Length: 226
Image 1 (cartoon, rainbow, N blue to C red):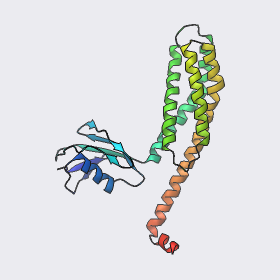
Image 2: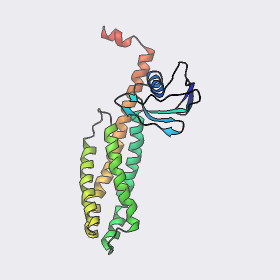
Image 3: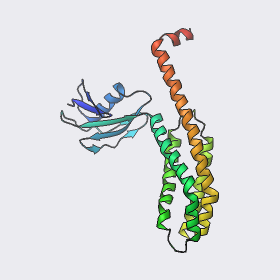
Image 4: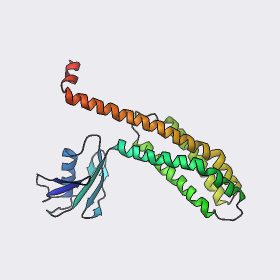
């Protein structure tokens, strides 16, 4: 039977009989995971374990022994969202600032293939799209993401036009897309993400304040209800 679990890098003793992985994950979710957190990674004996989640984490009932090395990572969606926002905001800002020299290079380019110096920027565009999709899935419903969604739509159209220009080796068209359709939205996205991040911090601060008040005055809510 399992004796210990490593949770977010800390060794936690298991005081109850746990025979398989499914029991272990259920016990962790019930006793060690806060309501606003979720399991994001499970590793057993050095190998990642696939799991499904519909609010709760579900895994196969793999037998465990006293020597099993079970490691579980737990994160808050807000924390993950903020981390992703930071990466995306910085990337958008860098991309927005660096497009002019890339556009000039493309305008003057005569070859049939994308210049190697420009390739990294195009990889950044793909990463921006992935991060944007991820952020919009993580955002709290109380956060107004209208402007972010609008910028995402504009950038997706621009990236489609850019890819077509590259595939047809129309470098002047590619340069125009960079300057006319991507430069400004990328910079605006960086600014908009800063505003979104501030709203998330305000939500977290309000939640923290509410929790503190609940701990100090546990009967306040019921008293006010009466």
